[in-house]
Image 1 (tube, rainbow, N blue to C red):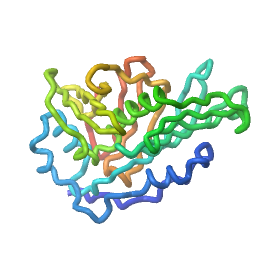
Image 2: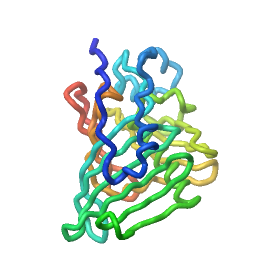
Image 3: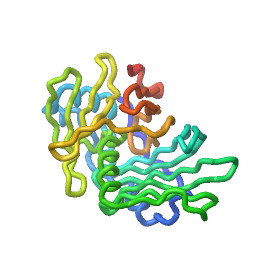
Image 4: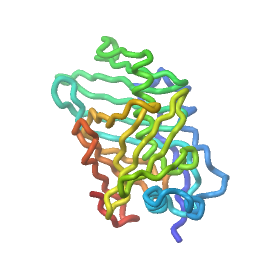
Amino acid sequence: MPKPSRPAVGPPVPRAARSLRAEWARLAEPLGRGQPGFDPSTVADLPEPARRWLVHAITPGTPLWRSVTLTMRGKIRIGAWRSFTATQVIAPLAGYVWAATARIFALPVTGFDRLTGDTGEMRWRLLSLIPVVTSGGDDVTRSAAGRLATETVFVPTMFRRATWTAAEEPDTAVGTWRIGTDAETVRYRLGPRARWPRCGWTVGATRTERPTVGTRSERQSRPSRSSKASRYRPSSEPDGGGGRSARTPASSSEPR
């Protein structure tokens, strides 16, 4: 049986998020060490698609980590498609910080999207001085909560914090997450021969949307949080569909 990897030291707080050092440290704290590891029998009562995904994604004995740190690179639309690099910390239920650097005519644009302390915000500056985007308020917070709910897919070890139900569609499970004061419902849909879910989300009981992915990127999760690290390439399509992942040699399946 493969042994779970030892926790690795995460990357330093990105320059773009240095004003959020305390929030970053709180989200990135490697909680889960020293507790019982993942036991496949604990998902026996979940809907079959959820069981299939979780048993595939989490090696038995892996600590039930509560956060993940991702590094990524790709293209982001700022007028035109421009190269970027980014680091993100995600802690389901608690929040996330996505900090990135892009360039416009060789000039750096740095900033972050965040959901911390039940507050969403976007702050981006040219040359670290000139405001490019500054946004907050209830709408941004609700949008950030929906984003966090869909990105729970990167932290499968937090599965116990969701309420799981079966969906009418085949190969689909529904997970409901309590984020702030709202219930965020995510539909995890898997291809019949794959185990990597494609997600849509519902806010409360009335509004259903597909998450819009504003970047073309590769995301590399650190194996300290999940023993089967994977690369995820979100689709640039508005409906969030078509994302593909390329697993490490520890897994041989090819998502479709």
